[in-house]
Image (cartoon, rainbow, N blue to C red; front, side, top):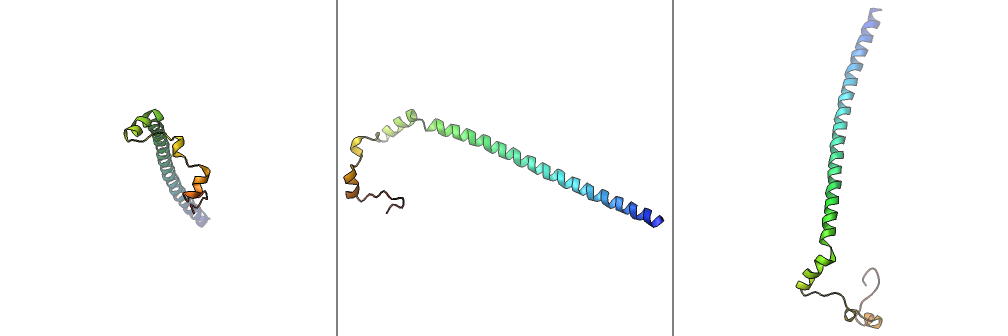
Length: 98
């Protein structure tokens, strides 16, 4: 009977140490997960800010004076090549560019 009690005590101690280690590992994993979730949220917020900045910078009323200052002008009919002129200029319509 004494051997059974000692075995049960050792088994209980071993289980306690294993459960403590498992609990510690779980807390570490949860901590890393929360850290990564915070990083992902910050990245989403940064992406939203960058999209807003891009939309602000890509406004036509902002770009047009800059383009005209560089000597660029809007596309006009004289810039277009008629259908027959496309073949004469060697321009292809294939997706490979050949």
